[in-house]
Image (cartoon, rainbow, N blue to C red):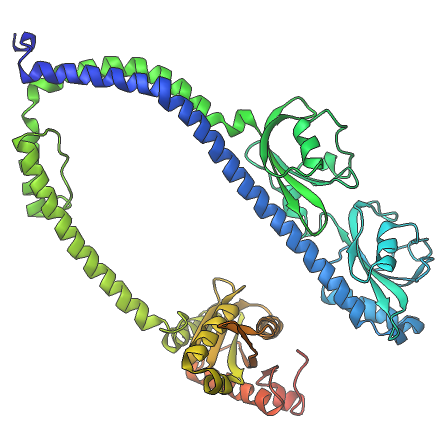
Length: 553
């Protein structure tokens, strides 16, 4: 009968529960669900646009890399080789084998476009072809830079490809040949991931050349090098062809409504589309709406049932709070805040306990942070944040032990800056510290997670490369990357400061040795570079093997 008394706590609690349930249902249906629909759409657009931007940037970088490579090859091609077919063929073969970025081959085309001077690999029917009508040949002769042609199928093998070309000039600036690299669209590291990667369950990517009105690449192989839809078939596609970049909902040529996000590939004038059917992209909102309808009905029934049973036990929170406190004191329950169920005496007691818990957690957190800070300082260089010599020696010991058990090779690069003392003398130690931090960042850029970059002290750094099958080749690549990274001046307070580096390399395989020995060997190799003019790298065993000469970088 107490439940019928409107002044009883039990009645008021049940009434409050029913009222809150009704308000919650109304808010979800009239406010929360429309907001959820909009937020799901915005989130899907943001995520899909970020993915489109990432893939487009990757394609752009791959194109830039190949444009730079073909330009570099063209600059390296000595004009006198054009008159010596055998030497020219060997030169082309060596460049193609050394950096096989052009999987379809490397060609040297006559300046009049009538046939080839050299090619690798050799393909039947390609040497005698007329290249003057091709767009990349015209662009290479017309422009004083590397260029990219329109995507098309090879005339020989019929593979989808794009050609990168650059003019070869003599000392007088006259074009003596055109160097062309054929990159197949499914070349590993070029556009293969775009073709192999689906977006969600049924979505994917499109790479479009608006100038050629072609699909350059696609997750759907049947669309590659097919013409784009006619104007008016896909309105969002029409806007993209006119320069629009962003996201939108459209109905594609197959009458499927989809969310499409468009991003440019600046190096080519192409654009990339990340697309996904709206039924899949906005599925969470639809499922949440359906769930809300079902749950609202169930919620009313459940709330009434729970309150009808739970309200008579309104004082149970006090008992549960006391039991929880005892268990925390005994150590059988983790120390944590208790829920404040009511704004009454029990609630006041619970809040006071929670304040005490917060203070204890804060003290524990401060102690933990202090320990982690000490641990970090013990393992890292305070100035650059790189690992210190202790961590380097420990990882070096572990790597040699692992190689001794499982086989493999490792390489240690000892890096010493060239011309660092004059920087300190001219600009002061703060500028010198800034240079060291910049050098640390450049040496770390591009390293694998298994590699270790450490500062040994002063202007000396070390890089440990592990898990290598050919340590000498891998170390030479990394050394060259490091030297190239320091080729750019370091900006110090608006002033460009040049700093170089000498690299000594010690390669190890077989039984483990003392870490200090391998570091000392790399140090000796570094000093060989210093004596030979600096700005290069040197392998420790090259003194005896090559009569003291520095190996090719």
